[in-house]
Image 1 (cartoon, rainbow, N blue to C red):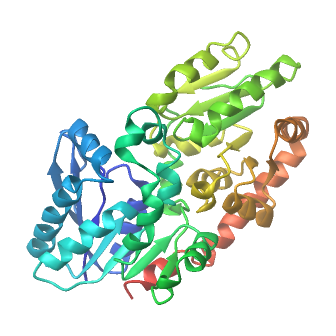
Image 2 (image 1 turned 45 degrees about the vertical axis):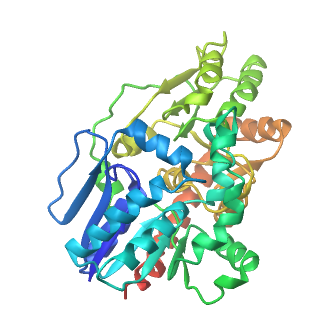
Length: 393
């Protein structure tokens, strides 16, 4: 089958999309990708055909800013999707993220082919956009009007013939809130790492020399208030000031709106000597870092966005046999409790208590880490990707 994948980014570093494509290629499908070209250097692919829409990144960001109330962004995608379908004789379209649904459906309707549309939800988008500072602060909130997406959600979901979500809990939430979806197939495909890729990454040399002087907390991903990590740093400072000895390693880009506060925290007298910050590292080096650290942090704010699925970093920690210290966001709480692979907290006192348990007890860290790897292997051996592949079988 000729399957068209549509994603509104540069595609090359979208690990969820890359993994799904590898699964579909193994099934014998022909894969075509439609994505953006921001005038950067891109990988070449022997087994898939990639069509890139040339656009300046700042212009694309402006179109996204206006997208709630104006159709410029939608028209751009609709036209390109129609041409993409016709040129490549696409037999099924797989589109990523809620806001792409209407443009994709219109693109199909304008094309020469009547084909099914699968909508892959990477998050609870209405909740997500209402947590982004770029969409909710200052003059931008009047332009973006993020609250409108709560009303748009059902309309956009109804354009799809199939839905893909990150967790059973989000699937049940959609069915409960939107009876109109009762006849729409909803498939669960969690953000688990691609084992074959990670096993290949094991041979990579360590990219940055890092020898932690003491037990090390680790956070890997976007650094932002909405991700909880910035709010966690003052608590870490308090614990360091109480005399506890540990290091913190953070790897990931900082949201523009949070850069000033994050830098101020990094410069704190006690924290700056007990923290390492690396702005970016390719995921292929992640197994090397996991061998150096003691505790994986998942400090996400508890809200509908983070309740919609388990972030891939939790599965990455589990792969590295690292105990997890996490908030009680529903999806990750369910995973951690079922796997017995970490400790949970709600308040600052909870965090202090649970972190102390982990820092003071190497045996506990090892047991929780081993439990996590065992659970991950169970999920993998039970073929957690089966639901996703059923869409095209």
